[in-house]
Length: 333
Image 1 (cartoon, one colour):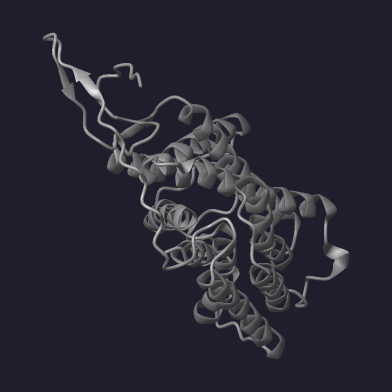
Image 2: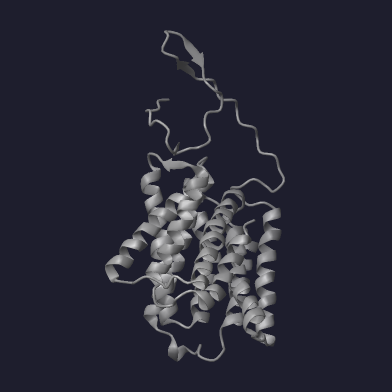
């Protein structure tokens, strides 16, 4: 399921170049994020509560608003191969941030797999025409590194804060928060409105439903159920998908160096999966049964008649979420 996300993100390169206007980045990003957030919100029917108001804003800025803007700037200032290689280093950065913030110490194989995978991406993308060092803009490199750090930190924080919160709801909240910021920025900058024709509508429909809503839900599901370092390695399928579709759609041909890069990327991902089966310090071993939690005592509820009725054991799993349309009654423990 986690692999759906990087494969969908890798496919956006072809869709963007073929169907979407190139000169309206802020409007395009807002049209990608806001409808995806509304779609997931309609499915989840939950609104934020308590700390999730500011958490949604922070994650929306890191994973959507600021990230989309920095990626666009780096794409404008750098050759796409250089920008993609910088972004691929997130496989290692995710593992290190998860160690620092979540206490998930990565296995050596995870770090080795990340380095091997990044090397494979470099072989796959760098070295072609127009990727020489004389064309590398340092400002573009700063933007690419900042985008990579923003998304890596945002993904680790999303894992840390997830708790028992509803997956669809929390994903929708950050998409709406980030999309709203992008819409404001587009209006202030005068980004304009894209042409409303069938190809453009199909392109936005794909990147909204598949490459944003579905992809982020699958990605966050992976972050909840897999070691973060493993998820980072699966993300290396993003540039690999872009290259594969370039061959299929545009007839691009890979040389011996590119094929070696493909082998290294796949090898890095498989190495991380093999390490995950052996377990990770700070996380349960794969296939082992976690120790059952002690049953929660039933809480008494007052029914207004002077008597107390036992509450439901276990409580609600929708931490930080309130059903849309429900009465906002204060809760006490």
